Each structure stands twice: as structure tokens, then as C-alpha cells.
Image (tube, helix red, strand yellow):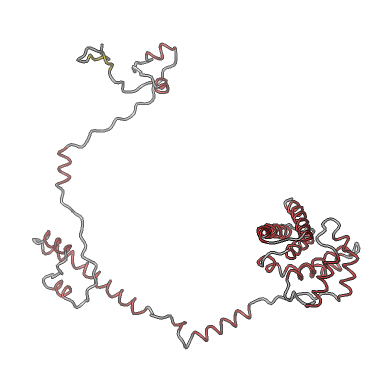
Length: 349
């Protein structure tokens, strides 16, 4: 009868158990807390284990203790207002004589609290006055040293600085030089005899279209891209591929510099091919460069060229809804998709 209390209604309510066993906790069963086994564990023939006894909360704070805390003197220091006052003002004179301060709310409250202790007030006020004076002097000195207008923008200095800077930029800017194309009859004969081998796996364009581009490039300039970087890139890439195909075994070292020079002619205009509006010719130029780059040690250039060609095809396809494309041009775009997909898969391995 120790663990059970009787209510006024006559019902028997068990006392609250301080801690339950682990098994009753897990099953959310009421535990009687008996040792060594509770009633539930005895009934089911299970092991009965108790966890470590938790520490109970300490006693609460007494009312007398709280009142003593409230009666403690307020030791929070009140600082003087941080307004800048000239050194020769009434505040500084008052500090030397009778400690005269402006009637601000904070200073009035401070003097009201410590009116019976003049020494303490002066000890608190004197360091603050020094801080106020130093702060004012620093603020004035910094403001005097900050120019209203930068010196380098003055009318008598800016033109000279601009001229010297332009000269430095012009001197440090790298000049882009190209390898001149071979004589036209050599390039024509070389590409005619090797074009079928170049396009054996990927028919990038037919021979007649390439010859038209080759003649147009020589007519514009054999020394540089002139006004058409896409045409310059595809002409140099095909010439480089033709030289690679027609190089006899054992002669690669003797002709590799020339072959690589024509490939570099195309590489130097790659920014224009990527940044300009995509076109069929720019995509063909990127793919021709990729066909050459796939046999260069390292896959970085090959991946970059195939990826940019694929992205330009995607961008160009977005504008097809507003354009009328002929059957022949549509077949060319389809062929570009096939070549770009094959080279992209090859670049992944």
C-alpha cells in the first residue's frame, strides 16, 4: 500500500515513478520502478535494466535572494556624449574650474546621481574630455587631408597621364602575326589530291565549295583573315589536314612545323569564331579545326573545339523558326549535327 494513494472518490492512483526501466521506456509502458525487476519485465520474463539516475534540478532562487540582487547599486558607467567641442570652448574651461558641462539628458542624469561627490565626477569627466578633444582634432585633420578632387583628374595632369597609359597599352599589346599561305597553285593542287582522304570519314563540305572559299581567300588576302575569320580558319585547317595526309612516312619531323603553322593560323582567330554570331561557315571551321586537333597529344583543344561547334549549332537552331532554310542548306546542317555528335562522343574518351 506504500506505492498507492486513495483519492477522495475512492479510486486508487499509483504514485509517479521517478525513473522507469529501459524496456518500459521503449514500449511506453508504465513502470512500477521495482528493483531488481519491475512487474512488466517479470510478467514477460525479460531482462530489466535501469539507466543512470538523472540529476534533478537544483532549488529555485529565493525571494530574498532576488530582492538583494535588485538592491545592488548600479555600477554601469555612463559616458559623456561624443559631440565634438572646440578645445577653447566652455566645456574645457569648466573642466579646469568648476566642471561646467552642457545640459544634455545624459550629463544631467550623471550630475544628478553624483552631485554629492565632486571628486568622482571630475575623475570621470577629465578622461572623457581628453577623448573628445582628440576625436575633434583627428576628424579635422583627416578632413583637411582628403582632397575634394583627385589629383590625377586635374586638367593639367589627366591628358598627360592618359597619353602615357595609351602608349604603355600599345607597347604591351601582343601583335597577332599569321603565316602566309603557300602560292595558290600549290594549295590548290595539294587540296585537290588529298580532299577525298580528308573527308573520307566526315564529309564536312564538298570540294567545289572549298575551292570557292580558297579562291575567295586568296583574292582577299593570303597574309591574314581580312574580313572573314571563318573562311580563313577553314582554309588553313584543310591545308593543314592535306599536308598531314600527304606527308610521307618518316618525313613528319621535317614538315611538322609547316603543318602546325597553318593550324595555328586557324587557332589565332578562334575568339572571333566563338564570339561572333554563329553561322554554317563558323561551325564548319570549328569542326575542321577539331578534325586536326583530335590527333594532337592531349584532348583539351579537341574537346573545346567540338563543344563550341555543338553549342553554336544549338544557338543557330533556335533562330530557324524565323527563317526559311532551303533543302540543300538543311542537309548541310544535318551533316554538321552528325559530325559534331561523333566528335563529341570521341572527345569524351
